[in-house]
Length: 192
Image 1: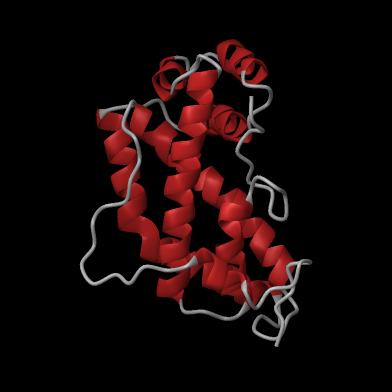
Image 2: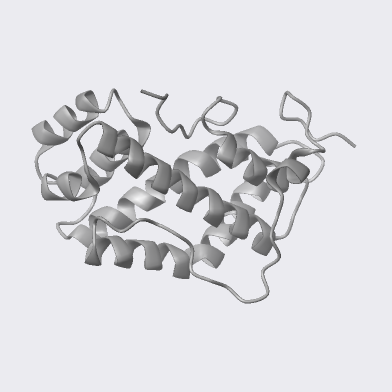
């Protein structure tokens, strides 16, 4: 079985988030970063759901057991500590009683984990002199993404077997993840 999807930046299996990091690091616009976050979020969740199937677990299973800490711990063990399942477990413990509240908390925790790492890595750089500057920027990115986050939650609430894919948008130019990373060194530092 392949390595689990990861949210740890710089890891071999979190590279889908590298384009987001590179964009924030170079001082890209809120809208540009939000589009990259959206792409990474969709592809990360989609990949995770496929991996969970390989372990014999589904999002429907997680949602059905969201009130059972013991059952969720068993899912974490069964999925070999999958980060997305661990975040679901924490979200279920912290959220309200409805599926929608649990799903929203789960998606928020995925974004929190990535955005926190980005904030810590880029704070004190040329474009982000302080941690608070980049933290405010990522808050604006999240606000920009709010309709898409709600769409994800609603789709999963209506159908836990939904395979996430972005809504079609008009006029969106395709991006090249490799080209986005060209200005970044192997250490994740933006090169001039």
